[in-house]
Length: 169
Image (cartoon, rainbow, N blue to C red; front, side, top):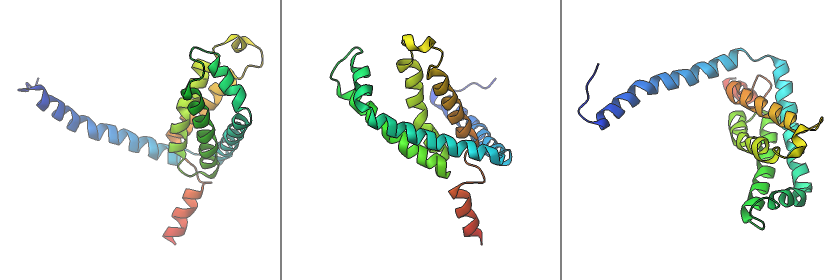
């Protein structure tokens, strides 16, 4: 066992030891995602992006219902509810377009995951959760797909891949 004089040396040594392992893991996940990406998954990614864009526009059309549902909770007339509603609309529309085009796929997934986690834990915890056609199942499915595309990234049918091919020519 290695004995360190103070905790700063230990933290520095631990950081230098774990950094290559962490970066190696990310590079291996990205390499695996690039090599194991069938084309039908791209169709699923495009459909997910279009669906999220549709849901963002739907949230925008029903913003008063969304803020009314949020305001009926604990703190009525809070600016945070309005900001959360607008953040949801912006993230769904911009992230949906990015997912459909295959541009910044991982970032688009990353910014949408908190919105869907909020939908699963805060919005879907009412009595409608146990109804036969609840949106909770759809929300969980979209969340799982976003986590999947966060790992594998965009596929061969994306704008980014086409830009890379044109640069190499």
